[in-house]
Each structure stands twice: as structure tokens, then as C-alpha cells.
Length: 245
Image (cartoon, rainbow, N blue to C red; front, side):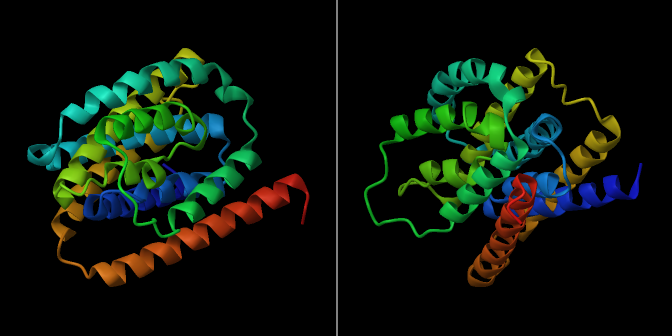
């Protein structure tokens, strides 16, 4: 195991702890780090999908009593066909384009939500599945923009975290299978995958203990700084890749 593999595992622990405490956000940072390290989508996204499948599985178990199970059916109803239809095109994506799209999604997620009525539950869960199965195949992380569809006014915070974890687990599992069908194996780098999986399980347990013990205001500020910094790094790398700077 190289120093880089250890560093990636440490990032996996920290980002999984973030998701364990807040419900989302850690995955977006992790895939952003993969791209910032220079991994192409064909390597970064299958690895990320496998790791996040493990991470979200452990988070689902941690919040199993709070999961809203009816959301899974509507999520899969759109997620399965979307994943199968889009999977054959994942090998054609340009790395720099993916970086720009991911940076844009990160910045868009930081824009305050308008105080409008939420999307009805069933269409919201189906839309989440469609986004996971289409856009998620290219950018990897979908929690920050799909997660908004799971903030239901009648749900407790724990219900949001558990249900989002469950549907993200399903989405990443579908992606692992889809990548395998088109020749991108999540097991191509086991020396990096296995420590990452162990790290995200430990991070989830640590994040679960932190939940409710940290200041939401301080957490939100740090979270925004990290995401803005990461998105600017992705934009910089993409611009360099395109030869614009």
C-alpha cells in the first residue's frame, strides 16, 4: 500500500464521518478528491461507487429503525432503467467536462432553497432514482442535489439520513453492476478499495456518534468552505486540462 492509498483511505474516513453526522455531503467531497488526484472517470467512478455502496450500507444499518422503506420502490422504478440505458455511454465522457459539471453541481447545492412546497413524495423519489441512474453514472456523487428531494417536512432528521442512505446504497449498487457490464470493474485496484471500505465503515460509526453533538452553525460554515474550495480546485484543473490557463 502506497502513501497515496493511505491518504485516500484517511479522506474516506473523514468524508464518511461527515455523511454519518449530516446525512450527505461526504461522498461529493470524496469523488472530488479522486478527480483532483487525477483519476479518470473510468477509474474514479467505479471505485467511488463500490466504496459508497459500503459506506451507505453501513449508514443504512446504523439508522435502520428510521428508514422509510416505501421510498425504495419508487427510487428503483426509475433508477434501474435509467442506469441500464445510460451505462453504455460512460466510457465516452471527457474528464475535464465531468470536473466542471461536478463543480457546478456543488456550487448549485450551496444556493439557498426557495421556500416553496416540496415535490410530492412519490414523484420526488422517482426523480431521485432517475438522476442517480443517469447523471450519477458520470459524476459519481449525487447526494447533494438528490438529497433535497428527501427533505420531507414530516420526516425527522434521522429518517432523512437513513432513507437517503438506503436509496444511495441502491443507486451505487446499480452503478457497480452497470460499470461491470461495460468493462469497468470496481475491483481493478483492490489495494485501494479494501482500505477505503474499512475506512468508510469506521467513519460512519464515528459520524453517528457525532450526530447531534456538534454546532450546526459551525458545521455548516466549515462544510461550505470545504465544498467551495473543492469546486474551485475542480474548475482550475478543468481549465488547465482544456488549455485555457
